[in-house]
Length: 389
Image (cartoon, rainbow, N blue to C red; front, top):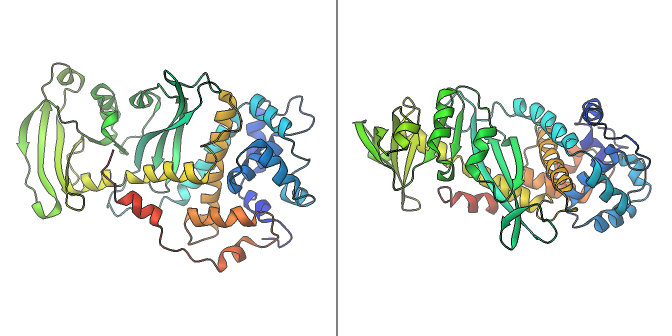
């Protein structure tokens, strides 16, 4: 890296300017723009994400304090609060959604060799949603409850990154299971879900598309056992059965056999029941697959705590979606940098260091050469609740 470049400029070298320009031209993003281009908007919002800015005024003041360093970081003009607010309000959010998707396409092959310890030659996804509370008076479009607003972030996470491959931003009333209608899962892939996604009509569609699923069963499941498979109780598996559904509706919605695995997690003294349409993998692997779902919970916690989506800089749907997609783009961009530079540090550590060094003119490799990760209590806290709702 050129020692004369700021850390922010070096980070942005992992982003294709040609691809960014194509995203902007696709939605005519710079039409009629006189002061702040889409690139300056992206830089300002990326700076806000990386340095944890709380408001538009916060962004304006902090960038203004950098003076002449802004040009060397890539900015082509001063960032004013009102101009940035107008850009977030008016520029099509799909510019940054497409940019994030292009970065995801780059990041996924970089993490394809990540070993999850499952001995499965297949892509493994975790599907979940998180709710971000909003003030209904300021966000009247984000209906959730009578006196409360919210948006939902529906995310399909490739666990080998973990890299988000699908994100849908909706109002708070959209049911989690509805996002299954928007997904296209490739044959042979696994989708890991909690019982909030237990909809047998949609699960049967996954089954017919030749994808596999692992999902927690509800306690009132009506079924008939066809066959019990041998088990090893020392693995925590308590039963491994082939079943058919017998409920008046479920038997019609999912007419094929299912596999029911009962598992006892000794570390938290709790029993779980899983349903899957895969009859080949060992029963302990079914439980291990579900255990991997904690990574999507950790992703939600990480992105809420370390990227600015708990507080939004605008109140319109376009502003909210712009901020969410730029947050995702920043997350993936840092993941790409981590892999291409061979940094051994966690994404959490990298983000913490970047928040303090963006305008330093030091090679990124030197910035991280003296940094050592300490054990992450955050990850440990999440692992203690791997099987919680």
